[in-house]
Length: 276
Image 1 (cartoon, rainbow, N blue to C red):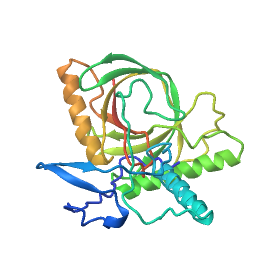
Image 2: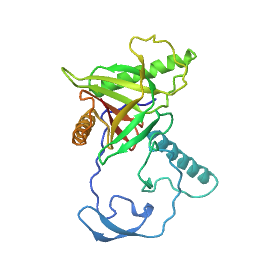
Image 3: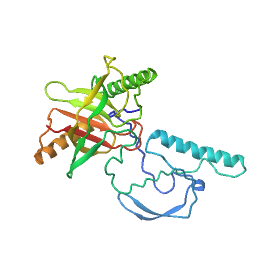
Image 4: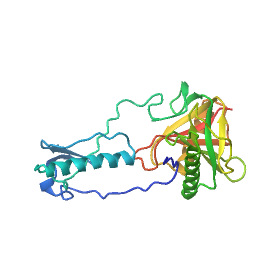
């Protein structure tokens, strides 16, 4: 399970190109620029043909799988005597967003169940069922320590599965709990354990089985590359919104929830703050 949450991601910056100098004209769709604006341009493209395959998710693994399918298709067609070049550009990823996600559409797989009690412009109030998690300490906010904690949970899940217990490795979200009351902040990382899972006795001193009772949770959703800093900024915004709304809540602790792999192309992130 590559559930590394709130670690820094690399951002690749591409310099702005003009005209079609960036793309060999003989192997690129042809267009002419109709209008030029400060932040975008309007192009008129000629008719084109493409080979297309479905992307199962925004995860890097599914992107690579889709790319391999197209590559294998081109190879088979070349062997059959058809000419489909494999050095033409661009590569297009089409994203159809449709309506804003509601309910638990953003959480794929085994996720804790909740119902929405109230919805505000900046947050929603959720009632979560009682749930079970495996939790380990994160030594600091450094990404290397988050990765180390993630590896401990991964090793624990593997060992318990080999011993005959059911510890799923495809559950979401992964939670980074931050306690920043008095003194230095403390961090922990948790993975969700679905209801009905056969779990072992608490035998690892570095990993704990944690039971959470039914609880009311205030949740703020945000996107972008996940990081400890983004979590802190959005926790501050959620606290401010809760104060404005007259809600009582735990002022010392918040959870950063992530629902995708570290290598995902897009991210649905949340801040959880429990009602007092």
